[in-house]
Length: 193
Image (cartoon, rainbow, N blue to C red; front, side, top):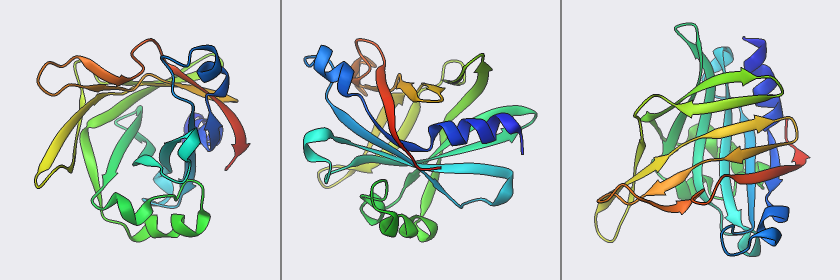
């Protein structure tokens, strides 16, 4: 396996929060806790991390359950996102290793527009979408399935990461949540590698 992918996986695996940023700018940045837990999926050609996050005041109610597969395709380093058909089956797996076992049998869906290019830039890794691509995902709505759209982006360092994720209004394409005023800056509080 590519040593850069191994390093990126080790750096990203952990428990994070953005406490300093939330204190400094509480109007624009909700205080969040985030988890990136390694999981043994897809064999030895890639590294996979389960991600979820929660409002720090409600850490028992996590959301945005997803998988990030770090791999090499056609000589390029990539991060491919997957969603869960039933996210409730893995709810809380970031904080609770016993729930994380459910990930191995959970039904997942590859997000075709959720593939990020990975570049090592000195002391960090940059994960950016393919040109012109916005990630689309499906989620249950009131009686019908809905489609969400999010601009993805990460910069990962050894002791933290910045999230550039922005949820988009499906009609207007304008950002409605996330890194509207700049990235969420997460500091690693615990290693999970």
